[in-house]
Image (tube, rainbow, N blue to C red; front, top):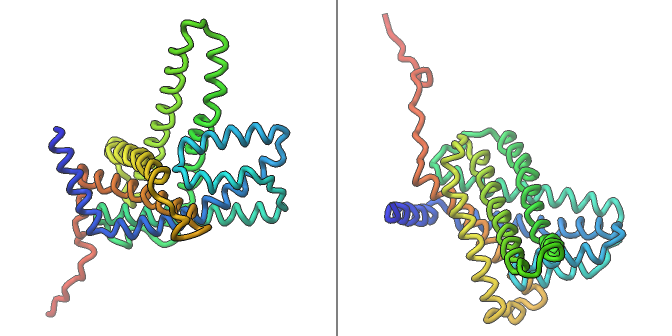
Length: 292
């Protein structure tokens, strides 16, 4: 069974080369970085109206620090250290840019899904494809936002549990709390990716057929983030080459790896559960004229 899964993974990696998954991941990462920072601008601007802004920002910074690589976190840090007092027009503009760029991420990923399953380009119409991409934006951002908040504010819940437990049980409470926090984050990621694979493919796949790729993409995503974060903190220094743009370039590379992990998951699903081509209907064939 393990050898069979490794064989599927090898075929999925090889298919990713042939289907241009690297190009699709670049396009999705470019749209992703265009949506990330306007979204942070909206969040920090809304936080400025909160009476406990400093505490809330500190909790969010801690949560992002556990999810993002080091250089990316330094760039995000500047948004939380500045009190963004923006106009309503700026908030609406940043919101529209965020939604439009996020829809571009979905369109790039959906194109990769279509190629993974060898589906024709005209399977969906122009407007239907964009409607599905737009609908997937809140369907994915809301659960991921919930998981981020859980990681960010989990230590508050953890502290409350420690203060209300016996001294001998504190270590157990800490371990259980952290396991639950990260298990929830992982399960949320798997669920969100399953939704993207299910609804983002022209021919909807059954839920059981999208779970293997969702699990693989989540594991690859988390592993790539850990390795890339370790590489940034110990070896890489993008500021030497890119100057003040070093953190932005590091973020772009991280988003590229995340998007490629999602596309690899789709290729993995396509190898395990390929789509059966639709037979040509007799009505689609031109009738042959019969002469008297």
